[in-house]
Length: 223
Image (tube, rainbow, N blue to C red; front, top):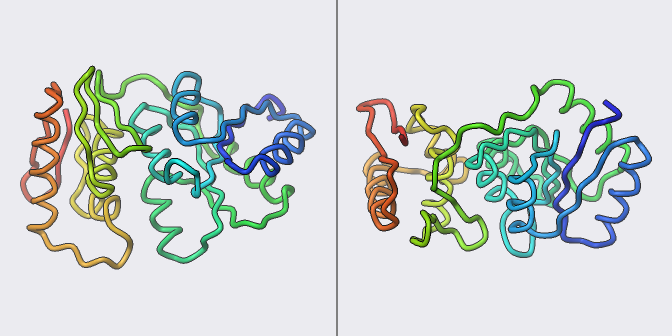
């Protein structure tokens, strides 16, 4: 456990410094980032054993950053730092792959304890696989394939990320609703279908080799 590597994305310089010193004292190896874009680049290149992501980043929502990392096959456990503690906020975080939440302000000792618990119950990160050539950008909400880029709405981004994080797997319709809309939102069946149609067009715009297939009565799969 003392060799655990923790990646942190936190834009507040003072808190970042406090966390780095405290975690190093606990024997963790620590890598710090200050923005969503930096986190995606750094932690995709070399995934840590565990990630601590601030939700309120200056350039992106931490939940979108988490989804982008999942699309890039980064399966490290994620603990979100947030100033918001409503049920809807927590559920939206868990729907994109969070393992735990720590609400600001918090005691560093509590975060350390939660890091140790999350690390114990998770398998090592798996970084193989992913979607060849397809990249999602949580900062500008876009999908890229080589030099081609298509803009996405926040809902389109979250739905596509949920699909791309599980290539070849069926993602059920209720899972896509949870990924794209806040808990409790009324989402009609034809609304979901309309968004899927829009995603298919966006994939065509970037000439993606991946196709979005319908599994009738169940959900969709990206392959």
